[in-house]
Every structure is written in structure tokens, then in C-alpha cells.
Length: 185
Image (cartoon, rainbow, N blue to C red; front, top):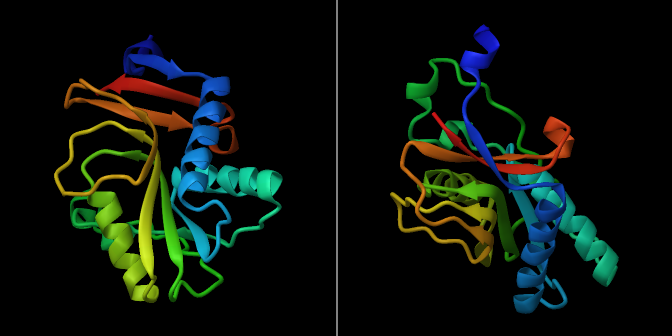
């Protein structure tokens, strides 16, 4: 009985096939601006940005034969709320095995909400070097910005979402299935 009560109500807004189509759409948007992907690197924000980043890399490799440099960024200590979350935050590994100097960094995440995660990610990137440009690619924009940050590339915009609802993106790599859900607290 307890399991039923503890489950949060959720509405599936994209199943597996649609999630893959949305990632393809995101790739196409990036290719419109960067048709040859010259001087471009992809950096995924842990944790939801990693599967999107890896899938974009595979799409670009299949379409253009280009093997883009890919990195993963942990922003835990750059968050403005880390002391509210825990006195001992779980810091994961930043893995960027290349220089970002003078590169067009496409920062990748699954969902953008307030803009605070992206702000933290930009602070972390600047500590690693001076990119020529930083662009933002997100799978879902749920609105509700607190900072003036907007994605350059977005596959799905959700309008009219209650402030107490949130968007969860599940990936087969992390959760065993691809799905985008609207959930209530």
C-alpha cells in the first residue's frame, strides 16, 4: 500500500520514439548553424545532459562522418544552492579531455527551467579556459526562467506548466527506458 501512495502522478508527454525524434530535431537545428561542425565541441551537463550529448555525437558521426570531441561537466560546486542541498554534496567527475580554448562549446542538457544550472555550467567552463563561444542545446524547455538565459537550440517547448510540476526525462542508458514525463510534487 505504501508504494502506491508514494508514487507521484505523472503524465507521459513523449515516449521512446518521440524522444529519439526530438534528439534528431536538436541535431538538425545545430547542423543548420554549424553545417560542417568546424571547431565545435559538445559538453554535456551531468547527469541528464550526458545521454543527449552522446546521442548527438552519434548522429553527427552517422550523418557527416565527424567524430566530435565530447566532454562531461559536473557543476555541483558551482551551484548557488549546494549548501541548501547538503553539507556534503556528491561531487562527480568533470571529464573534458581536450582544450576548450577558442572552440565553439555547445553545452548540452536535458531540461532548462530557471537557468541556474546553465549559469553554473558556464562558470565551470570559464574556469577551464576561454571558449570562442558558448551555445546551449536542450531537449526540453519548460519555461520559468529566473536568470536571463535562453537555449540556442531546443527540441521541445512546454508552455503553461504549473510551478509545482516538473519535467523528468528518462533515458534508457540511465533508467532503462526513454520517456519525457510531466510530474507533480
